[in-house]
Length: 233
Image (cartoon, rainbow, N blue to C red):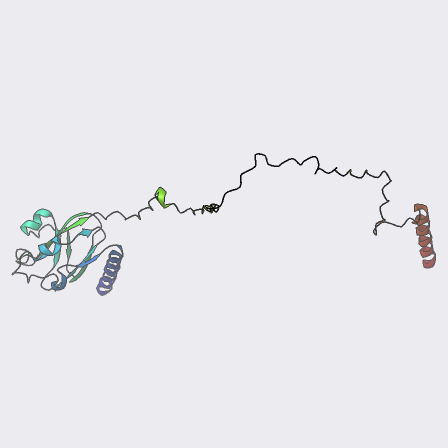
């Protein structure tokens, strides 16, 4: 049962780590060195590691270490500076711990093994609120001179007269009246004929004039009915 519970917890941690990776960045604490106390030559190693990075809500931090020699404990601000492990906020001991930051603020982590925190195995992670989404700038309006409307070409000017030629004088009136001698008597239009218009031709679809009367049709129908009855009886 204990093995099953540990497997289930490990599975949940992996899923949470993957979710954190999907929502934010992924950082391995200490980079290639990992989480260790082998930083005696640089006591501010983890401080320098965190100072040149910007962390946001949703980022995931991966602590990799030997769990027989190290651990990870989240503590308060005061306990971080005094390396006090007596009031832990959270403690991790798996050696492969993924911690996703879900809220902004300072997160303080130390190693509780003897002398490790004093030797510099502690890290202050400052988490900021997520940056606002960047919006695409709108298209600036075009200037009046850069209108995309098609330009209508100007009409070609008329050919100017050559310098040696003289343009004919325009008449004062649109037309000159004809002289009495050149005038012709207008033709008198023919008078309309008063004869009767011709009768319209009969249409092809018109019924013939020699149709039987209604009485004749009724008599034929009665005779047909009587003949049908006499044949049956």
